[in-house]
Length: 346
Ligand code: HSE
Image (cartoon, rainbow, N blue to C red; front, side):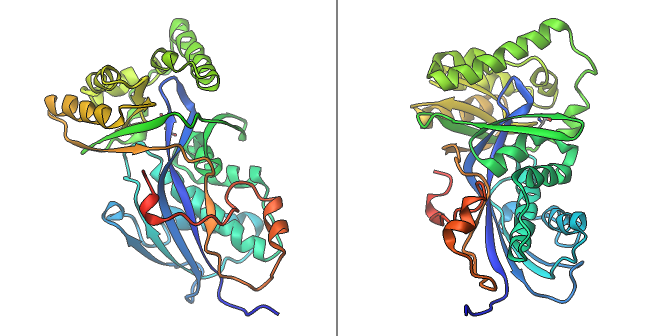
């Protein structure tokens, strides 16, 4: 008989870059930069978690029941009519908030995956679709384009109709890395959406539909020289530029320095450039172009994350299951594949 410990595990959830230019509200790419959530069963009150936030990037995140990770966690139990456990949560925040890198999606996904781990121990498996839909329901604006890649990893195309989400993961080439420039200011996604028109000319719509098709085809066939054209957008970036006037100059500088293409990441403020070489030069060019326009910022060079959210370091042996069975019908968050701290984000 296995010893009985309090349930304890860590959920690792990747950053994501949504839109990738033309794929407004429908494309997202997971990146090797992570928020980490340690969850331990304990405390007295299931409605009032003990939440500790580590890392300066998490300063200002709520530590009460209104915390997004906890709200997502609780919502899963509420949806099943099951009393949640009291928990202590430590959050290690590496993804800046308000930077277009899916920080809030990590909380929505992390909370749902953590709840699903508790339910699994009680013999109740959530389907992939349930986890996705519960996580999207908890995300501000209910857009799946950050949530789906945060959960599944890789490059994910999503659509929503009447609450039904389709999310399809497609391979992202190993040859490419994302060069991320993050300005020192943040951009509010919802405020940016208020700048968008309520309808679009047909030319603008077909401009984007063609480029989404071109981007996915170029990535799948290795025609990387088409990425620059394929990352053009007429549905959101031109309007959001009012909040970030230096954006086109920084994008141009990235391409001039060797990137295949670049765009706003999600609703901003980060910019993402895709490249297969000259990563440092591209980043430096982006920083210099930004500085020339009075914008300071930091940078990262990141590979795509292929696995999405996962539970690591589980320490809960109330029910011991054969490992193979434990993993075979889970999708991407199940592999216990500890990452070395020093290897993150490089
Ligand atoms: N696609 C969203 C937007 C961001 O551009 O507002 C992520 O959901």
